[in-house]
Image 1 (cartoon, one colour):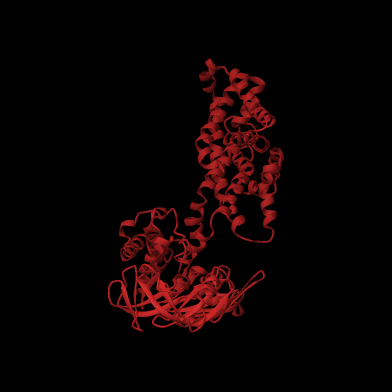
Image 2 (cartoon, chains in turn brown, blue):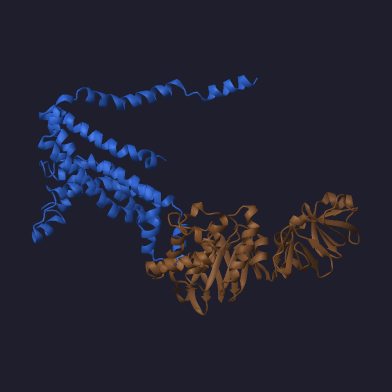
Length: 351
Length: 269
């Protein structure tokens, strides 16, 4: 259980956030670049001492400037998966994992034996002697995760664990990461600027903006009721719950069925749809987009050059369109429209 | 049309003639003395000249002391470079200025300063001599001391630059894995700074090999004990020109043998 009140002053920038992460919980610290997320991670890891506040993990105080307590990084039971992974380039995958075990006092033989077990657990047995630069993005991430977990931490910190990957492998690695995270039973704090990572991986979101927490809650609450326009832009993603009725089809609670491009991960799924991915039409669209339904507009809200249109009907969702289409389609509350979304624009994950 | 554009582009890229001329003069200025040396070389007597004890002694002493000085400079200089690159303390810039002073100081002055510190009646030399009878100047260790004094700054500055360019986040990652600062230094920092350490060691070695002023002032000019190659060359120029040239050829060959293989890998930016 992490209990942190983080106060850090860097020049004119002031980071002032409170964070609680329970055992078995995955919390995402979500915010734009420069919001202070990485500074918060560094403070928790002991790489940046607090100016004020207090960090407590499982009842032990790690940092408390008022009481003059500071536990150095090396003595904190915290594992970190860094952005870009930071695998030691001159060491093999095996030695990267053995490094932490050696540092915590294991002899060489037993460190290597345990490192081997971790490699097997993460399906990296064949990469044991590979140098980091020869690993794929997904493999490197698994080595980084194994390295962080091998020292048996009480808290796992992940700094933008998917940012180093290209879009093609991201979806798959994200699903893998979710599975691996589930095997760790301590507290987990994920730092990301990508709302999709946060929604797929986290049980709870903490949104930080300009060094302050602007909203916190379970993903469904935050996406359904964004506390500010900024949060709406950041996490304005539609989340729909449903049950798999085929390898690619999901029946929503409303009874409507949607088709997903990738095979579904389990029987009970959540679907995430970016508002920009939903297209609105005045007439039934030509061709046959697989996911087409009629919707009644319940709300229209303009925000600079984008307009958020809330749709009622079988698929409760928000679409984001241009002011031009609002005028062209005459989008006002009460209007009936056809809505479509491509199967590839639906991200499904297990509930 | 396309041709004209291409021609104009080519003419814009052409180097002005006067820059080329000055650059050629610079190359010639370095090359001509070597050519002059080579054309005066007593090639037929070379084998005989190089077998003389004055040459053999000087070569052995020079190589040994240059390596010893480089080793000592690495032992002390790498930790110093780390302190300068990674820590903050009051007076850090003064410390850096101080350790780089021997680079700009005339070596003779450095040799004199070493005498006042480690000589028989020096600040540290006197108590050491009185209690143990050990005397640093005018011994092989005096040569090593003078070489280290003059050459260590090259290593410190090169390694410090290398450490500054290295990503400190690897050290953070090692700390989160439970590594102590000393383990991080040995297992992460030094291996990552490898190229700069090699480059610094080569520069340091080359500078030590050529050391003259501080060595002659502090260690003297005793054949077999403190007479290094540069001292032997200087002495031989007075008495035995052919021997001086032979010694010079050996120094050039040794310098090239060290610098050339490393040049492409470590010494280019």
